[in-house]
Image 1 (tube, rainbow, N blue to C red):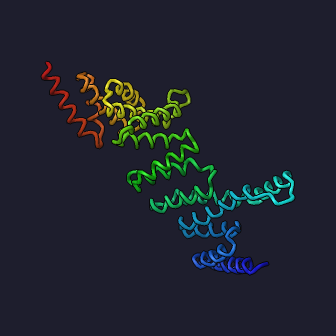
Image 2: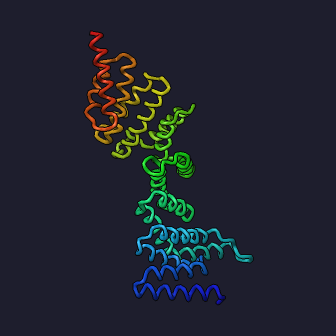
Length: 318
């Protein structure tokens, strides 16, 4: 046994002794020394992950779990020893993976749990990046992407460049990721740069295909996703001055969103009211805006203002 292994074993034994005595912080410190000496030892990384969980330290939990994930992932990537047959090498890999399966499963679940319990957006995003590197083929991949897009979005880090990058990376791995499609559709729908509306429509149309809201087994979530996508398309057409084309999209959106998402529903109704008013279809405008003003939220006052203008125009017309 070389000096590095002896140092690792000695420090791990001390860590276990401190843990047995209830001094978890001291146990973590000596465990860190053991990890430094043997960074690929999954037993030590599992022990450190468990300690960090007990201390409710999600940053350290993720650090150990993702380091372990990288070790787990490397088992299948190791080079074949010279002189070993392909069959023997495949058997060796299979045995190593089977031996470490429980450790690897624990580390993966613990790393994901650290993300879900982290309240600080900066820490959460750092944990997500570590997790994604340590577990590139994780069974939690879709959920981690959702957390990333939420964390980078408005109200959290509000980092649009990283948000778009993560969304595109997610779609490269999973072209049918509804959260990523809706995220990018919404982002480009709000963008004012030339070509943004066309991109928003493209992503939203793909989201509608994936959601399959008309399918017999479509649940509320899929209908909501499709409704949001139709809403994005309708508003993108309004920005392109394609008012007549926007109306059927917004009507479909309103039908799918009613009772599912009040604010998206209000947005669809307001867009319809605006479109009908622009085409001088004042009766239709009045009908949808009368519904919109009943919904509390940021669009309520705007809907009331537009309804007042529509009623005034109708009175003049009469």
